[in-house]
Length: 330
Image 1 (cartoon, one colour):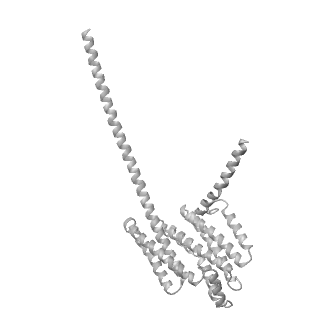
Image 2 (tube, rainbow, N blue to C red):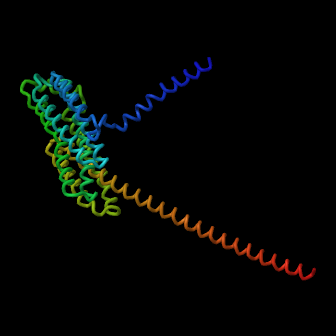
Image 3 (cartoon, helix red, strand yellow):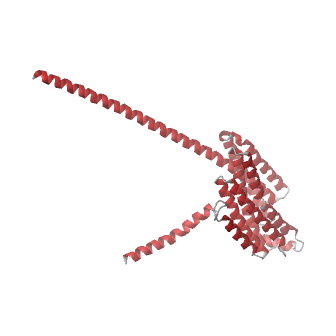
């Protein structure tokens, strides 16, 4: 009976902790596999087969976006591991999947539907994630002292992971250029999916520009004091922000958001580099402090040891004298 109660408590505990563990795992967003693993090729092949066997165009685009996000996570994991050759493999697979997505969107028949809005959300999310990965790669290229071939690899990877821009352009073309959709129907869809229409896109672009502007100001202060060689990198981020504002003025809200997002992630990448430098310096200072403390301790120990020896020697001499006096008196 006691064992049954114990097992019940364990099961309840596992069931209670499982959602927490799953939530923590979800926040890290790690890929299922990576190009440096033995069965990576099989995993990609199965994804490609799954995509090929999905015939409905909207469903194919959504399935492709799920697979593309997985490939992008692989690029990020390999970049963080310093395996640029493997990151390039994942980037090539990402680009091929994005070609399929763009072709699927181009082939969608009929008027705009709710399914298009879901695809737009996924593409926007992927665009933001790509900006983050691309900025980290660019920071590696700028600050890690890489060889010429490694820098060329980063350029190729960044080119490949920008392939989703074609899918975004295809979706924009469907959204605003389809002849068969009426203006009234377009307004109905945009109202139903508030935040995805023209007004919503403008709001998102303005918010992203403000976020990028604040991050750039913070990064500029850090770069001046901690990472002087980051001025060129910071100038690149500022250029993206300028283009974002120009696009906003021209009412090109998608472009404005993308440029601002790129500026934000570049500034964020700079901030991470500075934090790494600060952490490294702090760790070095702690190691120096520990070393100095050990040396001081050794000196104190040696001094105490010498005092102890002198004391023992003095006691020995005194004992010998006392012994000599005792013999003479006898």
